[in-house]
Amino acid sequence: MKVFDEKFRNNKIRYVLQCLLAAVSVFIILLFLNAISDAVIVAALGASAFIAFAMPEAQVSRPRFLIGGYLVGIAVGWPCYRLSLIPTLTSLPVVNECSDVIFGALAVGLSIFIMVVTDTEHPPAAGLALGLTVGECTHRTILVALIGIVSLSIVKRVLRPVLRNLL
Image (cartoon, rainbow, N blue to C red; front, top):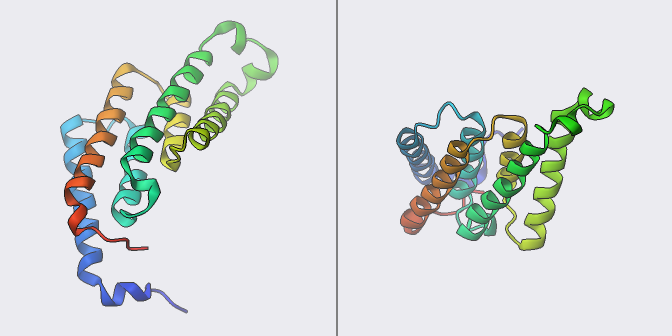
């Protein structure tokens, strides 16, 4: 049974370096944004950091996809969250029983559709849309998500010369 990736054996220092760079980058971003209480953002940024630092040459880690995907996730998650607060909708028998499930699923489906159509596919952004819909979507949450992903994109760009695909 193979436990370690063959590439790891020959590139141990690179693997450790890039993972440390990802950890330090996320640490600084979360510390600066004081965002640790926003579980949605922490999870999405963690997944985005994996993509940016483990697959820096992949299309999905380009700024268009990182930032564009988050913009789509926010543009879909916020309205779905607002819809889930409308008493007329939530008082309907089927919706009342599983409001978060319905609007959360709608947010994921719509965000995937819009990302695919606009060529801004970034999987963590669909998770962001879901989290914004079923969590508490505030202006602060949205601002922190945007600043976080832009910061992550800038850090990745600055470190580009030392980053290689680990997958």
